[in-house]
Length: 142
Image 1 (cartoon, helix red, strand yellow):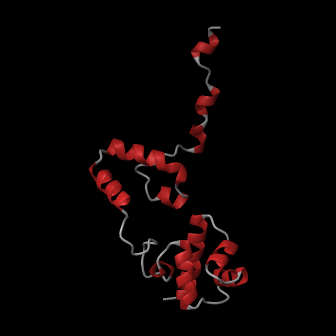
Image 2 (image 1 turned 180 degrees about the vertical axis):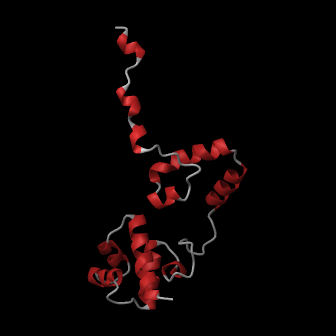
């Protein structure tokens, strides 16, 4: 396994998904922005202590940054709130699930949206504004 490449790619992905900057990560991981930049460009490989600090700052597992886990979520038990959401969601109808995803969509990243294509209906760009060009029949009866 090429851990240097995997760490670089996974760090880039998480930074983009979280919408944070290299400076923010450097501050939270108690290092410099130049050091973070070197890891993201593959110039250097981080020490395990710094991998752990970056994982904690980004709220991901060290296993994910190292490419040993597909899930970026750290091994933590779900909160009571999340257990209730998961339990209720598993019993919900397809219609209700679509409604849930419609509410969550504005807060989701593009990667998260692409993982849920059956629930997130994004119209093609050409169809998005077709109705804007049509006049209502009420407008014509003035």
